[in-house]
Structure formats: C-alpha cells, structure tokens
Length: 264
Image (tube, rainbow, N blue to C red):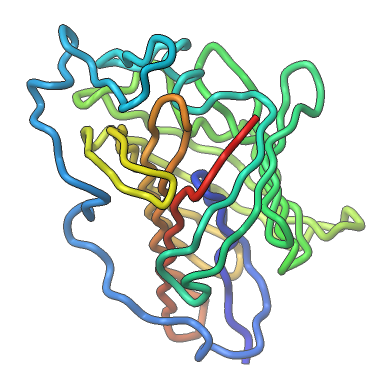
C-alpha cells in the first residue's frame, strides 16, 4: 500500500512524497495543542533586551540579543568544523546514537551529515541561516529549496515571527524529478528554557518552525522545536509531522534527539 514519509533534518526538517511498504511502521501521536516543554521555562525578565540569556559556559561572549542579529545566529549555530553524537530520545529508534559531522563545502556553504541518515546543506547570509538542500539516504532522494529556507532569521524575536515561502523539488540521485510543490513556513521564538541532554544542562533559546507542504501526492505539516545553546549550537530537536496522502488515511509521527557530545 502506498504511503508517504517525512524526511527530517535535526533541526531543520523537510518532507517529500515517498513510497513505503506499510503504514503500520509509524506511530500516531496526537498533534500538540500547545508547544511542548523541552526543559524548564525561564522568566521573561531574565531574557529581555537589557538582560539577554546566558548559557552555563564560561568561555567567550555568550549573550544573545532579544531580536536575533547576524552575530547571534553565528553563536546559536556555529559554522565551524566539528563532530559528535546525538541520541534519539523519542520515536521508533529511541536510544540509538547517531554520529554527525559538520564540514565546509565552499566559501559560503556547509554540510551537516548524520551517518547513514541524511545530509543538510547550509548557506551563510546577512538574513540568517539558510537551508539550500537536504539529502535522505533512506529514501534515496535529494530535496532542493528555491529560495532557500531561512531557519534562523535575523530579526526574529518574541514579538516578531518570520514567514517564508519556497519551491521545493524532490529528485532521485540521477537528477530525475520525483515530486515538487510549495513549502510555506513560519519561524517563532518560544522563549528560553533550562534544558538537559546527555551532554549536560544549559539555557537554550527555543525556536519553532512550522512548515506546511503542498506536494502533488500529499499535504504535510511539520512542527519543529529546536533548542539552541551557546556555544554548543542545537542541543535538542523535536519534530512532529502530520501527513495526509491523497486517498489514504492520515499518518502522524514524532521524533526527538538530544546532544550527547561534540568536539572541534
């Protein structure tokens, strides 16, 4: 029976139409009516423009502005060579450790590789951190975005969400187009929380990215919550997806992963 799967990035998630063997392999959680808590909320007074949040590190300037600047984006997702491990804490592969590497591709592009799972290509910009392409090894597809998805927009604040729209194209490794459609997305700042991961505890900014995809074979909503800490980068990613394939029963899925270790 044909169905459709979501192809997800640790922070930054994409979805394409794909043929699966069964529907039974996926769990069916209810969509969250309110944002989930990744940790313990911190009072707003502790992270206003006069007193931005700090992490538990003693190295460097860890302050982040109330409205994200170019420098803030660089602190929250540092683009420098590093490697490490994430642990899947919710979902079908709960308990599995996944190694990752971040490396430079050219002057302004980087790629983040999760072993045997996926690759995400990032591009630096004065508008924020952009995702240009994502590859999924399980589905054997490449997804490109035009224009690129802005996953950490400059200027983002509690009172100023960011909205964007992009054309996505799903291709086979041969270059043949498999599917295409539009992706409308909204990025919001959900506050600061004290979070715990296997790598330790830290104060993190919670960024929510809701993506609505209109493909030729399915309609998909992906709700992504990312916790960013300085200087670690993204320490938690939680993804809820709802897929409605044309002519088939809807399919929901929940996954989450947390940082175990990272080094340069």
